[in-house]
Length: 226
Length: 95
Length: 218
Figure: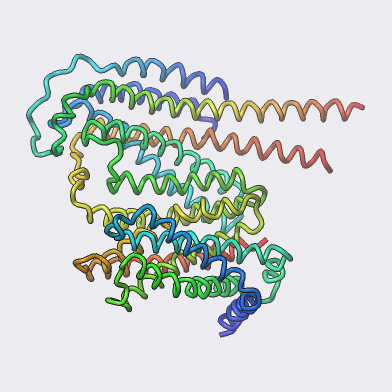
């Protein structure tokens, strides 16, 4: 209980800062939308997106803007050495990780709330057909991506060239998330909907999340201890 | 250290030259149940296999020797530096 | 290990002299002919890479748990060899593919998963090189995640590929070329061991140098 309370305190702190400036949410959202539009020039033929393009565009936009949000969220902590302050607080280290992860997830959820309908409208993707399945896929995919991303971004705070290293480290490790997300979403968006396939991908994402959140909780403790 | 590497070079060297494939015996017809390439037959006839095999061998050895060489160079640099520092320490203590 | 090094190298060298003879004498694969001979060192280099992935991952776990310098040295040495052996696999694969399948790169499940793993360990080395001080622990986390990612990468890439049945003919390859294949696999794994040992020596010498410098500063 105390663990969750501590985690919530970290999240609340991040949310308060964000609500005051709205810096990350605006910039990330704008970036995600620009991503989707730039992709349109590659994948739209005669006013219609090529097959499976919507799923790919959505997930690439999530991955790119997610990296941006992760980088900014931890840049803030670095600024006044607040991460060190957090680490010195008398709470279990994994609680800090969970708190940061929740913050990132809430941010990305806000971005996705705008991004998904936008992609649906611009690329004629019927997200409303299986809303729950879509939501589950996007949620588990985002959790998997952010779970690894939060750990890596937190670790990178103290290193040189962290801006470049975050995507360099993050994308290869999250390849399974991207594949599962794109394929699962595409299975639901294509003309002959393949629900069992989407379910297979969803179960893979759940499994990935379980394994990597557990690993990250352990690793965070080991890595962040001086 | 350098002796080990020299030894490796000397012993493995002949192996590279021994890898020239001999005159090709006609392919046997056994084990027909193996891999069946699709619709690439025309292309397959155009492309001789021997240069590809040779290139692959060459690449494998180049990568390994390139790595051993880089290892040797890095080790050499460290050894030189250690000797240098040791010399400085020795002359410094005399003073 | 280090003392008996010449012995190991001599044994390994003998194996690498015998291996080509065995490969030449091995029966011709019926449909691919000569080009299939690439398999005898393409497959072993992948085996060596995967073994190195697990050595690096396991050593990283030990390093994170105990902060042992030795474990870290083993982790970085084997990570470098993941990249070396992976490079051999990635370069010899297309040379075979162009003949057997008519394309250099076909996104087949095995090749793609290996490429992803190779990228993960490449990023590990980039981090160690450009991350500055303190990046060892971070890199250990990357190696651990890379190791645990093996089943996920393989599973997802495999499923992704089976969705495009046009080129899946690619994956079933004959594995019946027995003895020479296993012989060269053992030789490659031995090479991996020797190279890790040599790379470890470099790491230890560097640590010695750092220690001397530190002492001089005080």
